[in-house]
Length: 78
Image 1 (cartoon, helix red, strand yellow):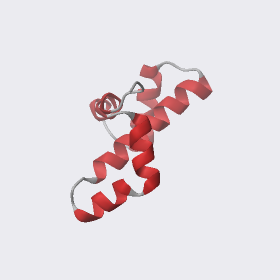
Image 2 (cartoon, helix red, strand yellow):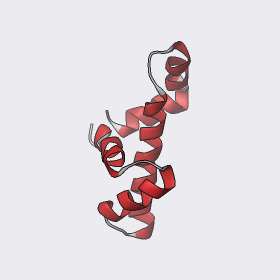
Image 3 (spheres, one colour):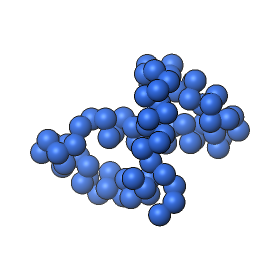
Image 4 (cartoon, one colour):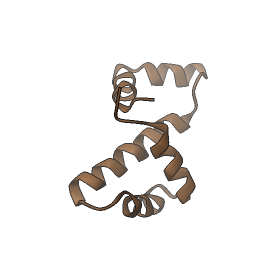
């Protein structure tokens, strides 16, 4: 999914409505948050994606594979 579309759906409240209706799980929110956090770390701290993934493991208390899954769930291009 495109991260821009996901952010739009989140801001409009569409994701929240879908979650409340049972169409999507909490994982969508978690993966989006992980993706945005890792991208922010790369941009602001100028670290590699691998370093950001290692730090995300501690922050989100998830294993490395879950962090990579979250990153691979979204893309930048349309």
